[in-house]
Image 1 (cartoon, helix red, strand yellow):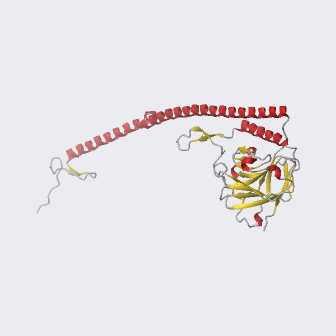
Image 2 (cartoon, rainbow, N blue to C red):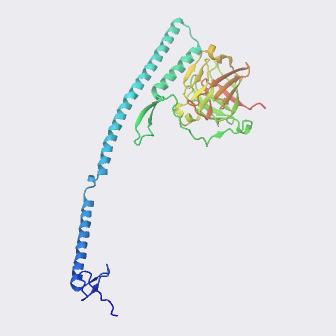
Image 3 (tube, one colour):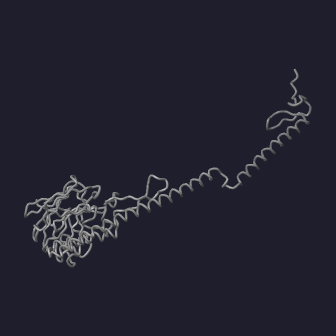
Length: 361
C-alpha cells in the first residue's frame, strides 16, 4: 500500500511541497510565496497599529478627559475656598465687634461705679482690688481674644477655614506622661509640692512653701507638681502670712493650659476656685455675692489652715476652712476645664506666703 502524498493546502498539488514552521501547513512552491506575502501584509498592519499608538501617546496630556475633570474640580474648589474665606472674614469681624461692644459696656459700668463711689466717698480696699481685677480681666480679653479660634473642617477633602467660638480654648487631650500622677492618695511619697511660679514669686523649702516677692497687686501664679485625674485627693495648706484684706486664690486649672504660660490666670475658662473679696471664679465668670454662695474671704487670716480637695469622680473641688469649720463646694465643668487638673495658687501681696502641710493620718 502506497503512503498518501503530501499536498498543498491551497491547490492540492503534491509538487514541491514545503511546510510552514509557524502554522505547520503545507504549500507548493507557488503558494508558499503567497503565504509569505500574506504574513508580510499582516506584519505591516501590526506595524501600522504600533505607529498609531505611538502617535496617540505623543499627544498632549491636556487632551486627556481625566485632566479636564481635574481642571474643573480645581476651579470649583478655588471658588469654594474663596467663598469660605469671605464668610469666615465676615463672621469673624461680626464676633470681634460684638466682643468690643461687650467690653466697652463693662468699662462704662466700671467707670460709673468708680465715679459714684468717689463722689460718695464710699469705697474700701476690697473695692479697689475688685476694680483692679476687673480691669485686668478686660485688658486680657482685649489683647488675647482667646474665645475666638480658627479651626479646620476635618470632614472636608479640602480643609476649609471656618469660625468656631467656645469658652474652652482647646478640648484636645494633652498627654501628661512627664508629670507626677497620683496613683494612691494615701501614699505620702506622692505629696503635693509647688513646682512652678509665673510672675513675682519664689518656691522654697523643697517645694513646700510659695511666697509673693512682688509689690502689692502684682500676681504670682504658682502651679502644683501633681496632676489629678481620678478619685478624691485633699491638700492641706497653712497660710503663713496674708495682709488684710485677704486676697489669695486657691483652685484648679486644667492641664491643657499649662503649655501656654501667657494665658494662665484665675479667670481663665479652664480655671475654677476661690479668691479674696468674696469672689468665686468658675470658667471665666465671677460671683462675689457671699449671700448667694456663702463664701466670705475676710474670715480667713494668717496662720489659718485650709484644705483643698480635688474630687475628680464628682467633677468638683472643695475648700474647707478648719478654724471656722466651713466647707465650700464648686462644680467644675470638664467640657470647660477638662481633666486632668493641677493646683493653682495665686498670691498678690508682698511677702504673703502659703505652706503645704502633711496629710492627717
